[in-house]
Image 1 (cartoon, one colour):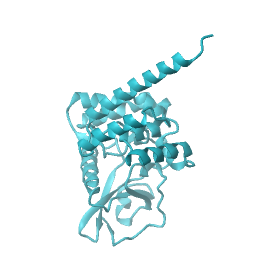
Image 2 (cartoon, helix red, strand yellow):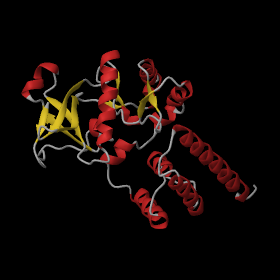
Image 3 (cartoon, one colour):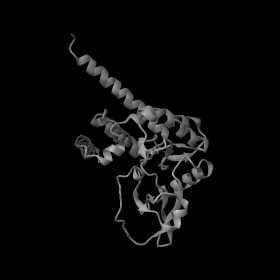
Image 4 (cartoon, one colour):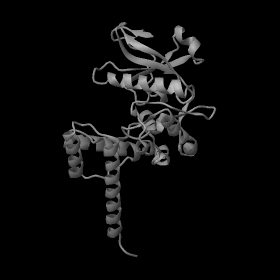
Length: 269
């Protein structure tokens, strides 16, 4: 275990590292002496959460890592230790650092398809959203690991598993990716749309945010967005994989209608 006392902060915190993506709190740290025999790397990744309303994510991640490390240990970075606060409660964990790793791209799509299938074999699949490009971690030897277990749940549902493989080529082709946006200069257009949506509705629908991050555009009008937010609020802001599929279908229908309208407006030659 690694113990953290009070509000101790690390000088070498690196929030832009690929293995820190999607984490509430994370840092690249020198490998603690007591973990040196468990990993050949001189650095490890520490992931934690202090807040009561997000600490459950640590428990979910830990459970999923234990499943993967026990049933298919080469599928993900190795789980090394828990992080405890003042020796009283678990607030995070430490995993293996993969030096010089990068996120998979469109050229890695065929190889990447094996990763969700291996997750399914150990009994895990996404029931909250779809895989994200930076979750496919490409090592220098060409092997692909999976990172980020927050949206995974134990399931044997075939429909949920099939959803993990839908649009995988598109996911790996997102450019710039979420990681590139995170580490690159501020996207002024994205931030402007984000601020406008929040001004209107005080909340940005998660699928709209996902679409903006993926493609940098929004295909719903203000009234449509307000309607979608109201639907989500009625469910106490909870959603399932079935909701996500419905949102995707609605967005595609809106895009087709928008494309058809644009075509009609074009002058004939």
